[in-house]
Length: 284
Image (cartoon, rainbow, N blue to C red; front, side, top):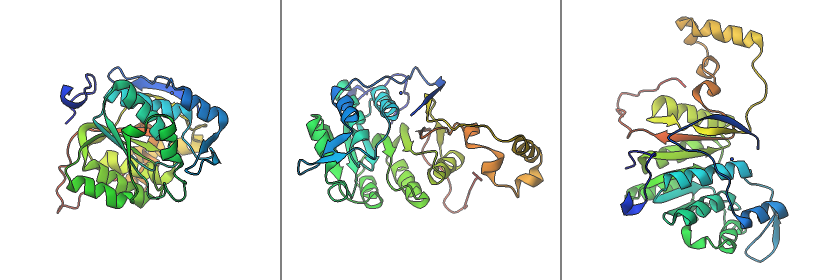
C-alpha cells in the first residue's frame, strides 16, 4: 500500500494546450527527453509487424505524454497498467519513465493489438528498446482485470484509454479499483468526453477518490457559461427543492470538482467500505 507520494519508493525500497493549476506534494510535469519519441512525432509514422509504415493518426498529444511520464517518475510504481495500447504512444512515455527510475513493470491490455493495430504498439516499444518493460494481455479488459484481482496482483498506477462507452469505462474503473493500492493513481484519457466525465464524477461522489492536482490542464475548455446559465445555477444552489429535480452536473460543474481538460488523474484515498446491501448512491 502506498501511504505517501511525497517520498515515493519502488520494490523493497518501498506537459494540446496547457493551463497551470496548483500541483501536489512537490509534483510537477517535466518534458520527456527521448530522441525516439521526438522522431515519432516528427515523422508522424510508425512501423507495423510487417515493417510497413503506418500513419500516426491516433495518439495522445506530447503534453499528455509528458504528464504520464512525470506521474510515473514521481510515483515510482512497482506495477503499472493501461487499458488500450493502440499504437503504443502512452506506453512509450510510461516505459521511458520506468527505464529512467530503474524499477517497475508495465502491463498493457488490448485485444486489438495484433489485429486492428497490426502490432504497431509492441513493435514501437521494441524499436525504442523498452519491450522488456512491457507485457501484453491480448484479452478484453473485462476479462483480464478480474483475473488480475483473482491472482492477487497489485498495481500503483493505471491509465484508462480503452472503449469510451460509459459502461465500459465504468467497468474498467471498478475492476482497476480492486487491484489498485491506496495512494495509487488512475489517469483517464479523454476525460472531457461525456461518458468518461460521467464515470469520473461517479468515482468522486461514491468511491474513495480525489482529484490529484497535477498542476496542468491539457486542452482546457474555451469560453464561459452564459450569464443566464450562471444566474439559474446560482438559484438552484440556494434551493434544496430545485436541487432534487435538476441534474447534479448542472448544479455542480465538472470544473468545480477539478475535472478539467482531456486527462484527469484520480488518487485512491481508501479501500471501498460501502455496504453492498444498502444500495447507496450519491448523486453525481
